[in-house]
Length: 338
Ligand code: SF4
Ligand code: SF4
Image (cartoon, rainbow, N blue to C red):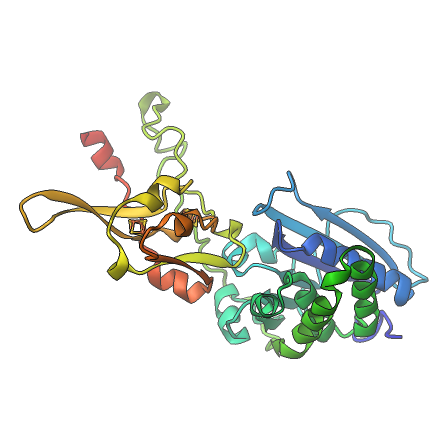
């Protein structure tokens, strides 16, 4: 049996899973904590925070382990984790996802990208970074990504015993979802085998990039006289991309007849239009793209499109960056002129 102290500098192992509702982080945390306590003989504590439990909303799962002779008295969230497991790559855009990650710790991300690429984004030279295409594995096996993430965790965290966690998965799925057992065991193994890791240089935390927010141009110092709100109730600064569960609509403009059926069913006004001359002297609305900042990935537009110009594809950060067509909002000056 693996020991808590193996490779550790303190008598605790703390893991935080950063996820969104529907990806199975809650169940993964339960399986992991039960495996540590029941099969590795550790003391353990587990909790999750998932607000209204809605699919697509941010979820955190916390696991805290200690050796049998060390009591766990803290039942507070894991604020300074040894390991952060990110179930959805888009969560990395929020800098708080990595908050408190200890120097020398481990960051595991569900992504097709390389550890070097992720390191470039998160600007942490002092942690090990591991990447696994958990979504690709789960699509292949018809499962959720949580067991792939557990497999990857067992590979990159030396204290975790893969056999103990595999038994935990087997027990959970035998009891509740027998028909998914074999596929989840394969998903677990694939996560273990396919994870790619890169040690940190031991260097310091690099300077953090600016938070990727659109920000608000109006604050307490720049508010209009009388506190007038010129754009009440809008959701311009919202970023709904973390609500997606690995799939996005892709638009093939060559097949588009600009009928707007997609726009009518989209709950978040993601479609971007442009008014142009239709070549016969009349102005016409043309679809030019999708603003993925507001897309929740519900795929209603794909179902509604009569020409199959929209299709569902697995989401990658690269695709979103390359194909996002941002909405153009009025500047303050334009608003005032109007
Ligand atoms: S529903 Fe399809 S064809 Fe119609 S505007 Fe949208 S993408 Fe184009
Ligand atoms: S997937 Fe849903 S939220 Fe995204 S563009 Fe289509 S209808 Fe809108």
